[in-house]
Length: 148
Image (cartoon, rainbow, N blue to C red; front, side, top):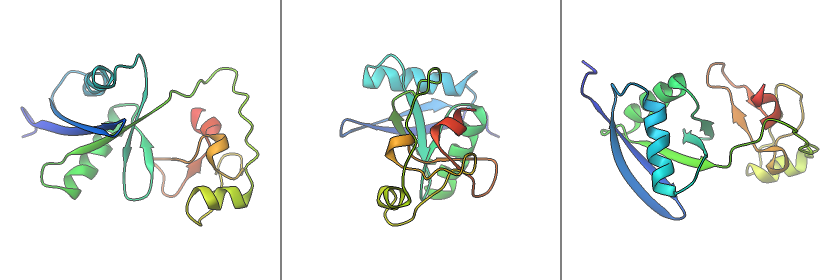
């Protein structure tokens, strides 16, 4: 049974890796995780991500959490989830210039350009990078479309 099971996490911040474990049956695992990460990095708010083979995926709710745990369990015996942190993208007043050229997109992702499946703009640093949909296969979004 899942009861009493510990989920292992590691968070890398400022070049330092910290490891900790939380109980899988915590009332609200995502909040517990966020509280612990904020404590470690000494920030007030931060966006959490987990990483699969080729991308950084937003960790925002229980479904994301379960996907991250399932992935980790297929990858390593401990099922250790690697957490990354990033700035919270302000959803209001989004005046992000998102004119990224195909060349810039290719440069940002090591030779493969990616287009947003929402607005068809090229993805790169200027528009917040690449957000992958965790539900549908092969959908990429810019930060603005992802925020919707």
